Length: 162
Image (cartoon, rainbow, N blue to C red; front, side):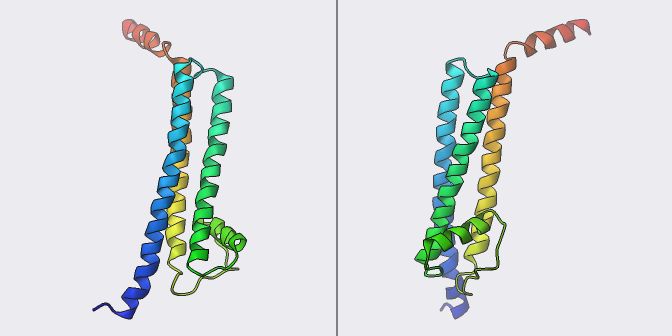
């Protein structure tokens, strides 16, 4: 038989895992779209051209930021859904402070739902890490495209010189 403490922990963990899963699903959609457009640029021969590269990295970064805002709103809905915060605007602010790990003690969740905050913070850190990796991968791919065909001859000449 489950004790009262186990039941008190189970609900926020299950809700937190459900919203974490939804956050990951939403976040997976955004890089997927970016990769499609980046592949399109590469296929059309526009990757490696400075203006296209910079424009695309800026656009992709803003697009990923929109993804984070959608995820923050999703977590804000979780706080309203659980009955912890009645105003969506307030829940959105609390969610943004938690997701970014900024934190704010102006709003304190009840003891029953308090575990949602660290779950959201952990998910937010992971999603920011994935976004950073995505931007890094784009920049690396564009740099490779810029030097495509130039590095191999340099290596060949270097080997011949040795």
